[in-house]
Amino acid sequence: MTGALISATGVLIDSDVLIWFARGNERAITAVGEIAHSYISAVSYMELVQGCRNKAELRVIQKAFKANDHDVLPLLQSISDLACKLVEQFALSHSVHVADALIAATAMSHDLVLLSANDKHFSAIKGLKLQVFRP
View 1 (cartoon, helix red, strand yellow):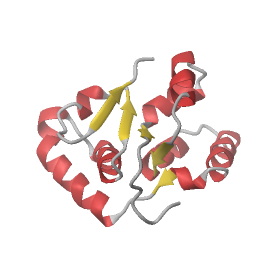
View 2 (view 1 turned 180 degrees about the vertical axis):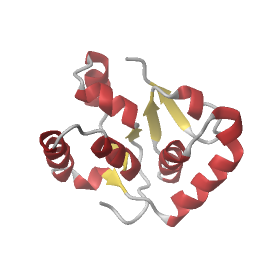
View 3 (view 1 turned 60 degrees about the horizontal axis):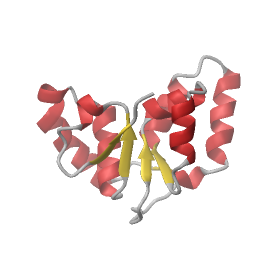
View 4 (view 1 turned 60 degrees about the vertical axis):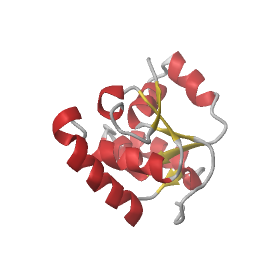
């Protein structure tokens, strides 16, 4: 995992898109395959691990991300600070929860586009570059 902010053009892939991808959804496979520089938040990695039904599924996820561990962006103080502000602003009005806020803050802090099907939670966040995915 990287320790510094990445100042590059790229796409942060939200957990929901990764789940569709893992399930073999053709649109997700195409969308992810077309991204030149893709990343995921450490939060999305944890959500994927938490969703594993057994150790075999866990090993698949570990293997997939160990090969590309530089693509998993860690939580930094600046991301935490921004996520706190996002929860304060949007928890009541748009149901932005902790994981959503951390993922949005990661995308914003790294100047990345967020690819997500969860536009209800993310659409109100000013400064977030959101690309909506439809499975």
